[in-house]
Length: 113
Length: 127
Figure 1 (cartoon, chains in turn cyan, green):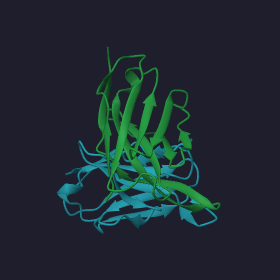
Figure 2 (cartoon, chains in turn purple, blue; figure 1 turned 60 degrees about the horizontal axis):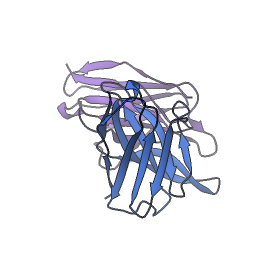
Figure 3 (cartoon, chains in turn red, cyan; figure 1 turned 180 degrees about the vertical axis):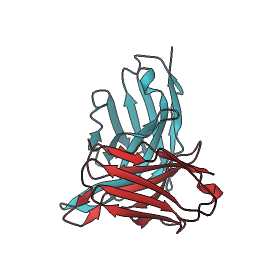
Figure 4 (cartoon, chains in turn orange, cyan; figure 1 turned 60 degrees about the vertical axis):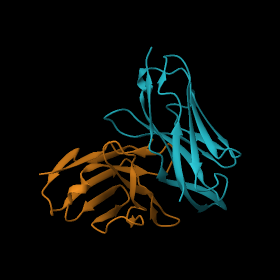
């Protein structure tokens, strides 16, 4: 199985500041035939299901605010939240869909400082 | 807009079988080439992919659960289901069903990420 490791486990950021979440995979998620990274990011608020934010490592899902951005390639990926808002308090997960079984990172909890 | 809703018993006894159904509304479960998936999350913990089913009935399971899991699809009822046998307290979790986005590869549909999720249903395994 591909192991997904997120860092940090939690972080506290002031309103309006930037939050950066990292995700590292145990093997490359870059598929050479189409040059795409099989990595997605989700946001989960308490009592709610995960919500898709980003797929193909950097493509924002429709309706997701542009303060959320994904980057990275191969084994190292980043989700950046620019200008953190109160409604961004949540746990964020990365998911690899390069192979089966699908595996998630352990989650990163984002709070307001 | 497609919506998913999980249903099933909230309490299951140890060693028995957990059975859940995901009802799909706002679209036909058999239209297009979608895959449909189950994911679970113990309280306060992370997400675990259980498996998926294609509209044709083909399935893929997490090897960690494969011996106990069956996912099936009922296109006439626009539903797909999960059964998990020989449950223990470790199977206590919120169970989510989800639609899986797809694309073409190797001449056929390939599953990608989960794009639409149900709200989840909590299942407790206890006597």
